Length: 287
Length: 113
Image 1 (spheres, one colour):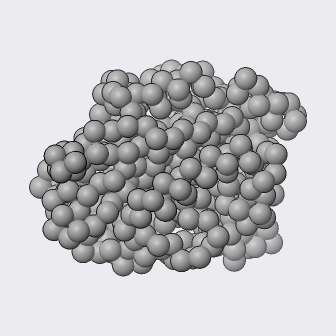
Image 2 (spheres, chains in turn orange, brown):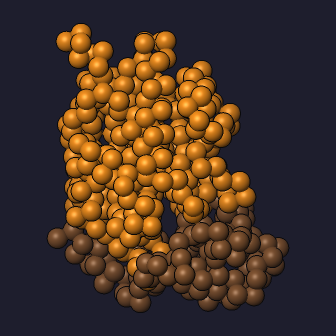
Image 3 (cartoon, rainbow over the protein chains, first blue to last red):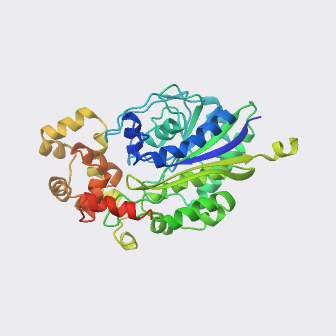
């Protein structure tokens, strides 16, 4: 049976892609962020995941406002990246696992999450940057991905509570997959930031800390926030926190925090990285 | 009313989505290098092709991001337009908050203290 080994949350700011391309990881501006990934690399080397289920939001690469799904699941064996129009280098394609994707889709729809199914799906920087951060060097990514897109662009957005439940449904589906796979879940974006309006540059350190704490111990405490409250506390684009919440929801076992890095600012954003370990009930019994 | 619930913030809701459709659709086209070049070559013709409203055309002409948002623009799409002019999110953040880029960057750093 497939097993959920844990989750990673990370910021996906586009300029990180440029910094990687220009080898700026050790620059004083960038190192407080990139150094936070040393632990992640060790964890990945130790846990060796086969699959990464990635909750993210598309910023106008695969989806436009003409047809914008609230939740969409990739069901392809390969996901390409393309020019996003803001100068980030195009990344190499990532491998998918269509059979695993369809298993998740079947589970989600049976659970009344009526997702959009995508046999072709471009993935933008919100997927490619986290993968490049976790597996640096520009080589072929050793895991297959299942991209799950959450609408954080066009209001009405799904509620925090709904995204937590979406994650839980994904978690149950992963654990019912027959193949012996090690699965990690990833939530990308955030944390607090706002790009638009006179409130541009808004960052909320206290609220971010609250969210990182509660993601581990009590995600329901975040789920009590309305989207408007979330915009107020986290900024108009800080709502990408929904991806982190879904990631946390997929961790169905006993969750503990292994690592946290938080740095202000990267671009206009409070940058955060977390590693959460998931000890499944079956594992605990065996141990 | 919804748009003004949070000061300095325009939620990209149904009203904004309807109002801004032509502008956002044009900005979406800037994913293609060929289209970015076509815009630079003949901005008027390019905007006309996408049927921008007068307000949207004037906002684009003025390069004023707050005006583009007032005309229904969504920041993720507007960022693709800003990219054509070599502007990043600190540049447009500074513009929208009427600060110098250095002062805007200092404000971000100060948020971490």
